[in-house]
Length: 207
Image 1 (cartoon, rainbow, N blue to C red):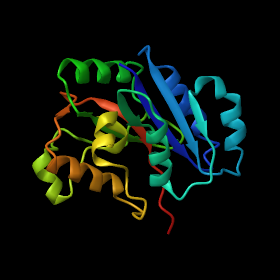
Image 2 (cartoon, helix red, strand yellow):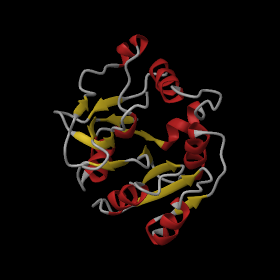
Image 3 (cartoon, rainbow, N blue to C red):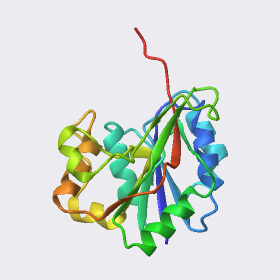
Image 4 (cartoon, rainbow, N blue to C red):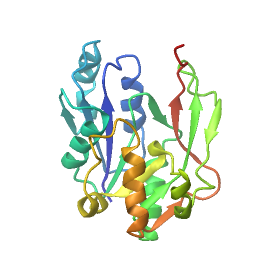
């Protein structure tokens, strides 16, 4: 199965190379990595140019925000499965995509989700906290629960059926999309026993 991984970025020169390298290191043999840049001005485009050979597609900006960027990536994707790895994030292991593809194919799943470990910006090997998706169940969406976005993989056909993320949402368009999927009775499954699929940098909040 082909897996499309979409990375949206804007002014992430310091971290986007590590995200690209994380995808390139995956053992799965059919990965399409698509990067959508929002019109970066901090050197991100130079970083992307140096790693262009690792990318299936590079879509330049500007865009109308994160969900517009993700929609552009989904529209360009040709994989059977679509996942998102943001420009601050890395995969926890090099077999994550292979595991996702095998489990979704063998169980005929529409979606598969795992956990996300939060790490300091300067040390992706040190886990600060874990967003656990084990307790998620579709019935909990009404209470504000959803699987962690970087560890959620959907069949591309799901986007064909239910449309794109709403770009008038500044946040939570991914939650709205998953809620729509619940109403449509998507076949979802957790990855199993606690398994960190991705690691996300946790930045300090500004006062």
